[in-house]
Image (cartoon, rainbow, N blue to C red):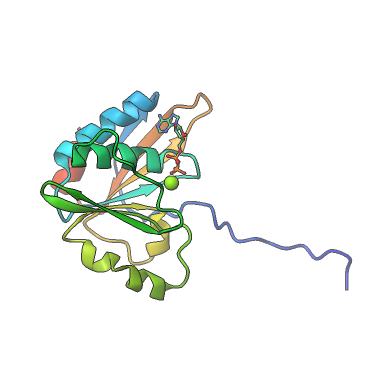
Length: 173
Ligand SMILES: Nc1ncnc2c1ncn2[C@@H]1O[C@H](COP(=O)(O)OP(=O)(O)O)[C@@H](O)[C@H]1O
Ligand SMILES: [Mg+2]
């Protein structure tokens, strides 16, 4: 046996994107721009909407979700921990429950069923980080925001949606 066998590691960290058309691009120069996007989203997102948040570690998925949850709940200091370990955190907004999920550490698909995310989608406002774990069963009416950190620390937010929905159309403007 050779001293070292080359090992090809699967790209576990590479965000997997659905094959959906791009509906718009927004440049987020700094955190203030991300907050502005979160507040715009808060005015547009409705119970039953699913927002998928994609991008590498540190791209700003949780940051955007946190600002959006705080805007929806109407509490600027609401504690919004990353659901990295709990997988799901839920919040009560005035007219909807909010589910904030991070599927990065999701084990087998059975664990997904246990979370109850399927039932929540279509009722609650669902914000899902690392949505590639849902592939190939991408939620069809969802809007996906893919965040990419640029060398100057700004973020490019690409908007993808399988079909044009009121949320995707409003966001694309
Ligand atoms: N324009 C921006 N939008 C979002 N986060 C930003 C921005 N500029 C810098 N950051 C910083 O980048 C980090 C993003 O972290 P986080 O949201 O936890 O990433 P992710 O959930 O994608 O792994 C935060 O420390 C945040 O302060
Ligand atoms: Mg995160």
